Length: 307
Image: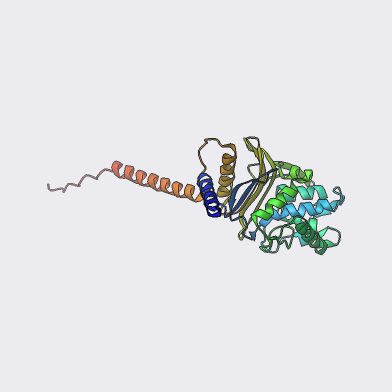
């Protein structure tokens, strides 16, 4: 009986895999409320999580009940010396803690996230202790977070653990609101600067997103956490280690397609799209070369003067 059940589950999973081509290396999609697994792929693989870390950073900051209107200045200590990533928040910028949190979540700014840990009561060491306590409280047994930005490859977790983190983060109205803002304008050193969400699906037609966070480092690949509503169903998806942004988006589209059960064309994985584009380009070049050869006429042979 057990063998028959295992075989049935294998067939069921294989059918799902065919229906939903996935470019991400680790995937877990869970129906909210019921806990039903809709899609699963390497959900227990422990991998770097990049800026998905910032959801944990936000929860720890909000749990501390610090004054969100308190002014925070971006310091030299907040500059990324590990990956040397860029930031649109200059050193010396002063913003409210709420605005700094907004930049960390919506625009995934690393200096903003670092400053939240630096200004935590007791500093980075106390912040890390609070993160570890939160990890234990959420039952994230396969998760390690060393710092608040996600730049460190030592920040690691599984898709299964990250569903727990996303479920917890969705209980914070501040986090759901900030991560689903498409853009915002802030005063930076006396001038208005517009910041955008790193997830281009936020605000896109046909998408109902209740929580969002992207992530990227070379070690982690392209990562994404989203809570979405489609065809009356609510689900949390975790996508880890996609080869590129297009692959990550394609996975999200295919998962939504699975949830809605519609007949819209399946989105091809990024590697397939690239191969098709390369082939089409080669065919165009060959065709153009053929046309050029047909147009070129042979030069008339020059007659000799004594002919």
